[in-house]
Image 1 (cartoon, rainbow, N blue to C red):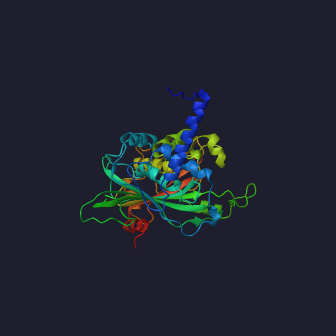
Image 2 (tube, one colour):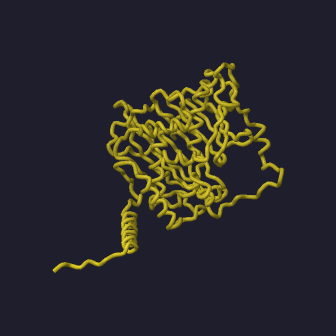
Image 3 (cartoon, rainbow, N blue to C red):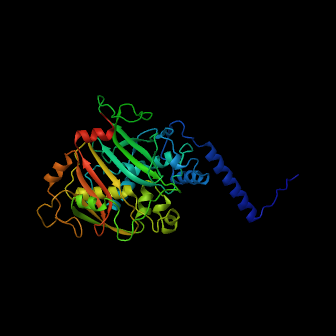
Length: 403
């Protein structure tokens, strides 16, 4: 006897499929690693999966108020199980977007490994053990240590960890340090320079690159402080402006409204604040804002054109002062360096002065303070970020946390 099967309407079938998809998604979320132990991945996490986890984390809410965050949190670590090559298409698109028109002679830029590895940063922040909602978070500062030149054809092993110490700011927000590390081939006698335990299969490898980025988890109850009266500057602003070195503009950037989406497609950071005015407005930004790490990478490209020749090991640091609403026009400048002799190719961009001599940049690079730079608003009136590059051994050791 033939078995009669129930007939489903199109709407009924769609509903059944939707219920099945929700069930599978729920099961996957329940079975995902909690993050209480180091998470070892066989390959890069997919972007779709990362943002499913982010939405799930946002939906369940933040279990702990940022202002009540403990001084020491739980250690969170995610790593790749084996070394991987750089994505050549991704690297090529990054070089074009960040302004490396002259290439990098077979090496990757200082700020490029974070483009590849930021997917691990996101994975750390969407694990159940991470106590905050990552959506809408912003970056406060970054510090990159490159122990040697990294070739574009190398294979590196990536790992990321959340430092187990959260800090509450005066405004009630929470600062979290995210440490991304790359290990590569090293001579047998070379020792890994600090950091967490090497990932599985990394025997004989050494730390070659580290980035410590501080994220700010915004509190919905943040203390914004009193606004100064019209025409009145905040306390100390005039003194700070007077003490600031005169910027030597070396480049002008025209950033389009899609800059955040284009960079986010490369590094996986599709935070709503970077995508569109409709999504950024949900977090208090009238227009999408540029990625701070992208601005740092764009500055690196401008500095290389204006006399910066990296000497390893070195440390690049940047403090992020204010968000950049897109589209925008920004200026990149050296700080504390005098212009060099003008030549036919002296100006690196529209409105730029002749860059300083390479000898002057090299001298600054070898100092404790380092070669200082800034990204400024078009009228030069406000700092977007300020940073420095130094190859002084003591500065590198301090950045690595060594005595």
